Image (cartoon, rainbow, N blue to C red; front, side, top):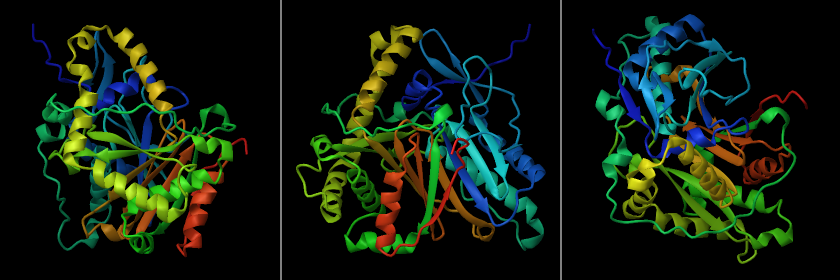
Length: 420
């Protein structure tokens, strides 16, 4: 009897936390979107998706739970394009159903790519969306090109599905993380587990010019603006606790890797507004010094080894999955007390110059139980997207008001909340 060979991969180190901690409030789904200068053509988008999934076959996987670990199993499910008809970052993973871990939808001029974080991180998802948009525009506007556009990404199938945590784990250096209780954002939450998305579009050039006045980077500058925005909403008695900002770091910048799976770390930076001046220049100087010390290959390797050590522990490996789920959920809830908000900078999105004129911008945002900023840029458009489960929008107002007071024009948009 012929038996079909099943291709499967165990979850990478970062992905292991997502299945046991996903719930209706935080689906662990994030969305990349591309806004075009013209309406999306659904049939052409489906054809582009069919081509893209052949370049990224690893994405045609379903998530299953074994006796000891979750794993990804390759499937023959064909992903289908659909009109956007559900709230942003709605649940994708359902343990009771065999389904893909991503969705492609469209709304007017926008192409949306939503994905469950256990499958990939921001860099991997962005690569998928770049190919999807490229194939779509290259076909829709084929008559406009004298020479057919080409793409510059040539990683092999093995490189794209590589588990880089395993590759760079050395078990030599460890990161000693100090325990601290962070200031926590509180307030009434939006009903039905919805999240509010507020998106601000600013000029990359103008924002960078402002950052350079403080001799710092875009990420440090906007992180400082976020911290100051939060401090404006803190009561004086609450300032005894530090505001802790979690910043995801793309490890591919420090360790050579072309993987489209998760390969990131988290760096937490704390600032105490009771012990420091709280003025923006002071916050920027503090963050600049912190990141210059922490964002090195040596420090990040130590963090990688610390968080990857669990799956190399013989006792942890022998623990049944049902017990691991409980332990990981408790550990996740404890770690959540050590963070106030998150800021993630995906960076600049590059597209082949022939298709770039048809694209206005890219954006990215994520489901969250806290308040989170995700940002990326294309051409001179820097998109800064807040997601939050809270009714209050004071922090977002503070953030964009600080930018406008500096002379940085902001174009704002938000999702519609039904009960408002």
